[in-house]
Image (cartoon, rainbow, N blue to C red; front, side, top):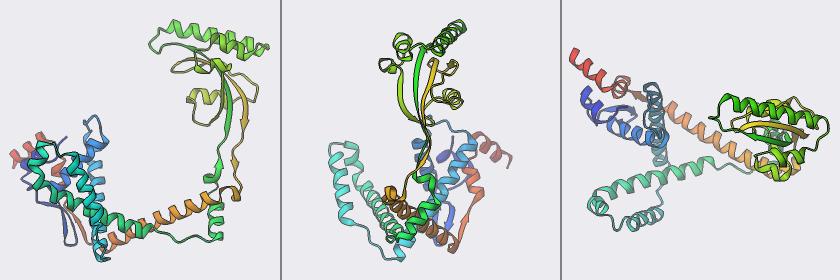
Length: 324
């Protein structure tokens, strides 16, 4: 992974070199590199990011920085003012938290103006977003139309009630152990299909926590079980028992006890949820529309050559410089 000083020195780029220009504003190579490095620490915990993925992430960061620049300009155009009282309180919190930090005391004079500037920008963006996303109260008809157009958002998904007998096998166990568990499971299935009591066999054989309840897992939603178990249950009717299924934890014997079909909840029952979702979606739409308009109106120039240089592995960049 590269970026920052190695890339800048290898390519001859200065930290103040603009990698993007948005109207009269610029995003410098140094600011961009710092933002990418901070983002990498948050998203890629292992730190070893493949080159292609790094470049894709870098483009994502740059687009976010462009949007932030445009939105801050829009906030200024609307003459919004940061909430200085809230900012003062947040800075006071920093002062208290790092009061005994020698490093903070040493760098305080240099870092405080930067911290305040960043908090002011955050305050402006929050105010702007609050203005733009604030949707009017929808009419009854608008809420009803939203409900009709988005039935999936108001539907209780299918639920199934399942009973389980788990014959535990360690994942690292030899094939013979798994083969033995499958044979034991087949024997249990045979007994169950002949009328044996599931709860009694679960208490006797199951290694799952549900054994004390006779193997009853209760009602569960689709997707809560392992794919192999779900596939076996999908073929069953209530009361039927599946053939033994190998899972990560061992071999499972499954019985489908009940199946509750997906159900669209009546409008009156979900009226408030429909209203809240309408307001949320309208706010999202307004925000995306604003960003799109700002991008359309702005003159945005990206230095693709500089970006390519920033993401060129050091060895490659060095060889390129030698060839010149």
